[in-house]
Image (tube, rainbow, N blue to C red; front, side, top):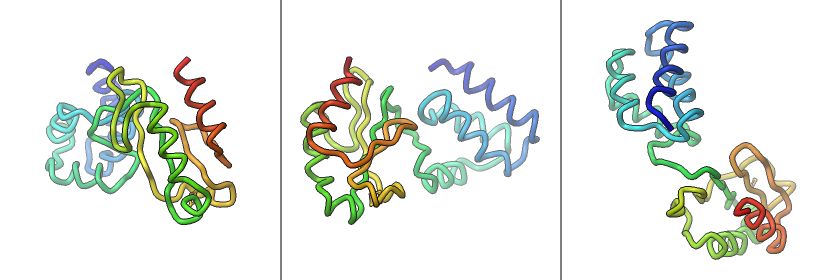
Length: 155
Ligand code: FES
């Protein structure tokens, strides 16, 4: 993703809301949305423009699970592994997905198409095991459905 795009977004947000510490989170969300992650240069840009120390910026990024400084794949798979999902075979789903993608949890595929993450409860416990791929929810996963979903995304 080009630098210009996230810079444009940050400039839009600061124009609307002002260059203040309170603008940090909306700026980070805008960068994450257009770039898929928060690049180091964006942190520097925010530090200079909002006058917020880097340590505070990284603190906010760490606090909000949907923000990351790691470059992510086109598809970010977030598989829940909290207790209700775990009791409904999420470990097995993880093995299936890792095998289908050839990557482990926490990794991004070499072609940058997939990032696989294991996350806490997604709030879909009554439909466990569950996962999200980008903004889309997948519930009641089975080995077959997980394989099918991955195959469709691989194209
Ligand atoms: S435990 Fe998996 S969605 Fe809640």
